[in-house]
Image (cartoon, rainbow, N blue to C red; front, side, top):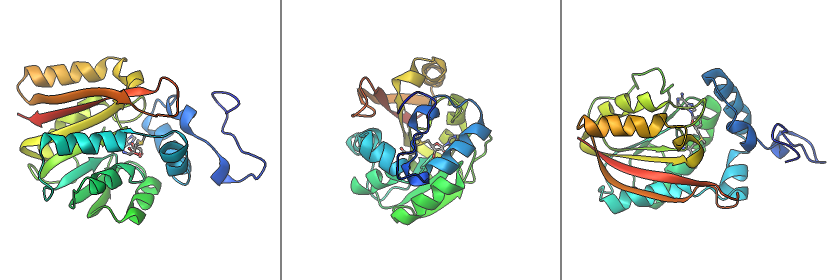
Length: 222
Ligand SMILES: C[S@@+](CC[C@H](N)C(=O)[O-])C[C@H]1O[C@@H](n2cnc3c(N)ncnc32)[C@H](O)[C@@H]1O
């Protein structure tokens, strides 16, 4: 990157060479976010998964496993993107994974992973999700709570689709956690008895980006 706002194109040119990560922290509206991911889909796995060393998908999948969710339970991967989070769940032994996302271009990439039973478009900030009440043993939200992305109030409808005692696993970076609305929402849900904290762990978000750390939260519904 030559600067925060640059989308670098190297000498070989073309979309495949562009980089989008820095811009992701500047998104503020759903429309900006939708446009951003439409372009980013092609190189997201290369940039985030490989170059930046994205650790949250694996951390979240392991946290769910450690919490004890059985392997045959259905899991909803909320904001599944290109499927890095679904692939990590599959590698952890989960076989029934549905995914939803705002971006059709990201969903098209997720389809190619073969990790998902069902994929569907959804704007989490405009509930309800097209999913039945009480269906899922867990919902994972990996890298989706952020500026211009999914807002903390979306947790209400995600809880609706979880079975009683189902797990909510959220991985997010420090940047958005420190903004404050996310921990405030968790605290309100815990106080109301709608969520119970099982585990929280601080660690690497993007391993190859200096200072990029984040939280993984595991809660149970109820
Ligand atoms: C950083 S990516 C994370 C994708 C995937 N979970 C992962 O860990 O690689 C954030 C994803 O959130 C999705 N997203 C952003 N705003 C959304 C919204 N309002 N509703 C649903 N998905 C949204 C984006 O399209 C994008 O795929």
